[in-house]
Image (cartoon, rainbow, N blue to C red; front, side, top):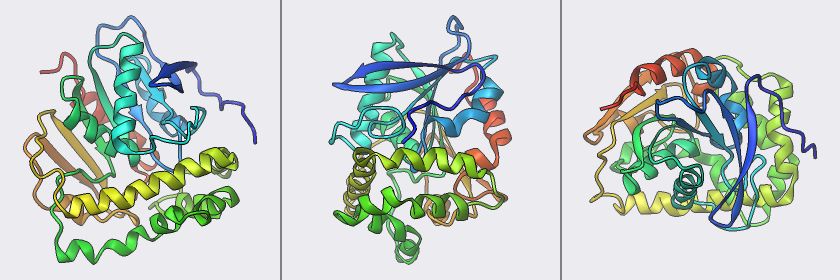
Length: 293
């Protein structure tokens, strides 16, 4: 497995000790900018590299921090903590280690779920949040939503003990999801391999499998109303590609909490950040404006 980091102009790399785990961070933009930094959080089966076009669009004006979640990319895989709450706590630890009091958060997929939990559990640390193609924790289960559960077929495969890790190491599911979850084809073959090859490490394949066992638990917690009493006080924009094959748009068409605005994107699938980086850049400039109220 290749350990060499892919090159992106203007990006520097560092490793930060966070909650006992060494976290890799790709960083770009003016470090002395008075504007709050933007934390960029990736999803599965990707890592920091998924943000490269957004980084190129924003690095001249904003400080950008794109960490790899624990167990992914070039961050350590400690064997535990592969869940949304721990991912959110890791981001707080990262901000603490870098001396950052508050930041904007822009996340996709698991990074979007992490951004939402960060806003709910640590509202004093998040200024504004943009969540791309990930559900929010306030979804109310309905029969029509449950009928859409077929879209998540791959999650149950990945969560299967033993089998999930082997499937990830073999690579077909990573290639399949990246190739079939889009309206256009945003990934070149070389980029797909950059994502897949990280799961050649058994510890990282195991991390993703355990994350999807957490998904099963989080799904049941959502059905039983774990987040029913929680409040979202952080202004949030939910960008959602309507032609997502893996997460139903029905999840965001119903009631949404106060402080959340939903924008459905008709010409995009699941990998919105890669299909429409231009839109993400524009919305980041508009919604994550500075100074922020």
